[in-house]
Image 1 (cartoon, rainbow, N blue to C red):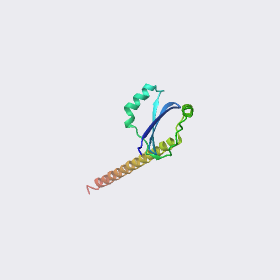
Image 2: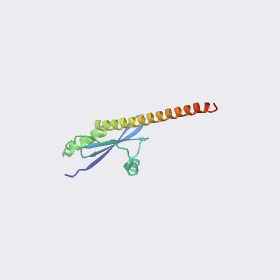
Image 3: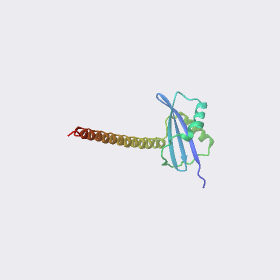
Image 4: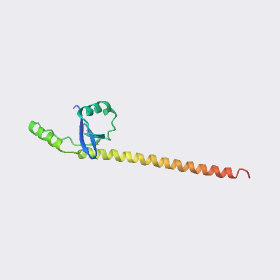
Length: 139
């Protein structure tokens, strides 16, 4: 059985910016990436963005997802396409993946700031010790 990768881009207006959400479905794993475009992008701008930056996008860690059976009826497919165009926002799985990525970045930032705080505290302690030694040098 051959596994395929399916990529989908949803662009929507999230006050005050236009946002794009890339969803990458690899087998049963879903990864997402959120990109803020700013002003409303044209089709040509989106295409150029995908060609230029797609390989460098920071996708979230993959999460397991269920693959839904696709309907073969062309009228149903057309109806679903219209529904997706009308619906703004991203799917709940995508939101979960974005939230997971956000939490991981938050933990990384906390750890880095804690290490910087400890290093600064240690530097100040050593500076204080050095000043104390210099005060008693002449005696």
